[in-house]
Length: 256
Length: 98
Image (cartoon, rainbow over all chains, first blue to last red; front, side, top):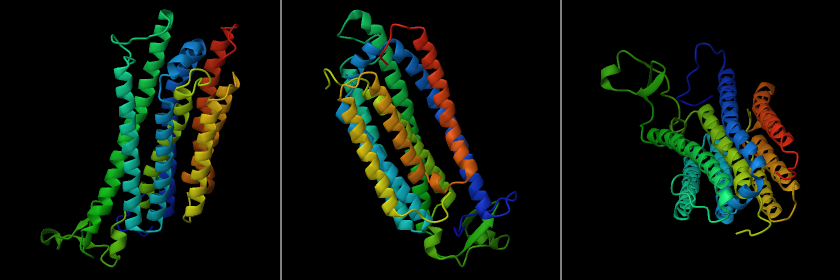
């Protein structure tokens, strides 16, 4: 691990061992995320099996082409995130920062399209609550409202994960950018964190990275970038399931 | 965990496969498949998951313990959902669609 900010924790023997532990820990966290969405999808599956016909009708109120466009955007963002991790692994600061920016842009585009879809539902009075207005058979209104409850909760929680993901990507990007502005040499270690030399702490601290080339100081830690990438890909995978389950229940008749 | 960088070609290949699968999902949804529609949609979603997990999340280079954790969450999710749906459908004998 050649990154200047890398610190080997005392309970690990090698950098590779620490990186492996970080990866495993991230996958454990992702498993909890899978089970979180599983609970929601379990409820969805039960109600869909009971109200299949009405949910198929309600599903047709979702915009198939906006959903398809958003899926493409998210799949593309997974590619760019993987390219960001690859650039980080190859110690390419410009590539890492560039792909992170593209990924954040695509993530933001997804959220904007989602907001447009929400506004359409609000305009069509399909938001569950007192204002919900189902134009079809009155007996279908309850199950249809239930469908839209699942739609807003599932896509809303997914969008929240996207917002958190974009925030973490911005943090990674900041770590790239902030290091670019630092002069070469003069990194000092204190309490496990690297920071610049200042006249006040020259005497009390130990230089650790003065010989590391400038480009390496611009990189966020690889294990961190990899784990953020894993999170981003999982959010993508969740959408891979939400798209057909919400948008594509039955488009064979009266499809938009 | 990858010890060497994944080539751009492998990543772009995976992306192309994902786009083809997306097209297949949409095309299948516009085709009258009846009860099979949900099966086809979920099979395609699982294929996409495998492509993303193997190529983008580097499970192809991951340690066995990491692969195990990656798979267990999905298996538990599939078990829970299939048992819940199976129980519900068994109480609705007249239902044939899903």
